[in-house]
Length: 301
Image (cartoon, rainbow, N blue to C red; front, side, top):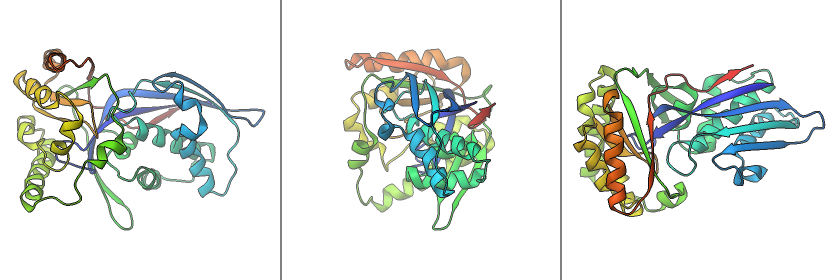
């Protein structure tokens, strides 16, 4: 028997569409043991408790199976207990967490034939982009680029004593597929230049721990403006976070979660400001007061 812990992630970090993500200290826990009858038995607490009991909806099982298929082996029956603390359909990487945990579980069951780089490549293929799976696997802040042949990446540790994260989750779901459908096929040259500039500044801010640059570095024109109509109160919530002292704000992933990076002592203040801004628009929400997670997925045996 072994247990896997995998962190939440916030991706599309500011202007880093499909390439920059940050791991957060909110974890799903998956306990795995072999089933003597060669059957699959799933027990789930927390998010997705009903939906994920169906194997066809369970990305953990699908990813685990992928490892066995690649090794031309039959997957054994498993007893799997899930404790899901990462909200589903919220833009905090719940799907990436399930994929990464499943790949790691399958790899361990087969004696670890794949390296972390191999697992990142497989996870990116399954997910379609690396910005959630990379920090879930590696921890910290990761910039990852999918090329024709491999995933190239760089990673930074983020000091929790200097930088905290607020994730305010509106109490409604927004499917990633729906959120992607509103994105344009092309963007203007001016908007492309805008994001290139901000991505460069964002990478520099994390490399030099220049958190005061995040207000500018986390602005975006490639996806956030197009998704704003799907997320009532988003503009007001982002503005409220800035006014309450956040370093930088953004839509987390495909939404609807609002992310604010803040000084640790301002976590509560900023969270309350964002929740109040959403409340004024008639939207209930839950606030998660988090820190960067510099350790990616890990296994306890």
